[in-house]
Image 1 (cartoon, rainbow, N blue to C red):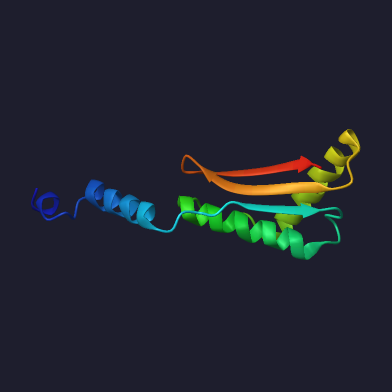
Image 2 (cartoon, rainbow, N blue to C red):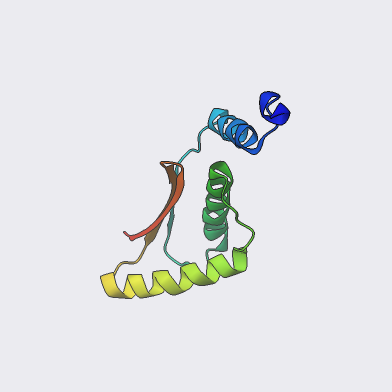
Amino acid sequence: MKGREEGRDALTISRAAREAREKETPFAPSTFACSDVRHDVQTIKGVYEALMNAKRACGETSQDLSFAKFHRLVMERTESLKEKVGAARMVFSVDVESGHVSFKAKAE
């Protein structure tokens, strides 16, 4: 009871942490275009960094996704999408919508 009155209970601490996150600078959406996902590592590195920043802004864990794993996943998915649609370039977007990370890849 005393901890609750002094603001040291779990509910008060989590509420204070959430309010602190909400006061932080909002996440700025990012868009990247790439024609060769396999060799344009700088662009994919930018997409990865934007995704990690978005995850941190939402308070999501990002330890289980290394850059190598992300790059491999993006290569596999975009190559099949490019073949299906017949597009030469891909456009990646990273945003935060309703407190959740939104990562999209579209053929251009």
